[in-house]
Length: 111
Image (cartoon, rainbow, N blue to C red; front, side, top):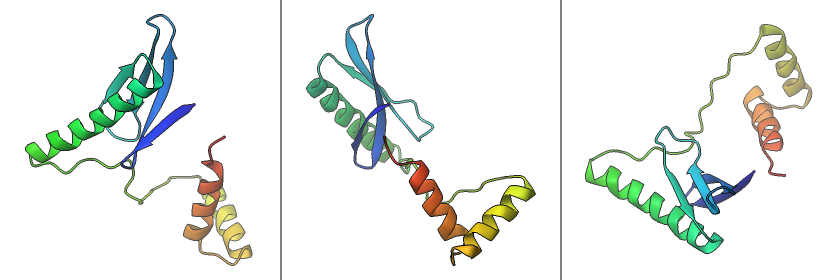
């Protein structure tokens, strides 16, 4: 997956062979924000404009812009997985939160 980042927002970028353009979509927020460009430079410019427009629109309407993540994550897992994760965290000398953060960070590494 190809991505680009601006002001903490990440977009997925794909090439649309049919229309001969690059198309992007902001990830991690409920609003659907997309943009496109014929060149990578134009795509980058349109991405930044899309974010600036989103932030300006939120400000104009007195809304707090949605952030891609709050830092709080609630997971529901089977009790046996929860138990094994707790044992693994304790064996590593860490809290379950510290251990899970490291595991998620490793799993989410690009490439």
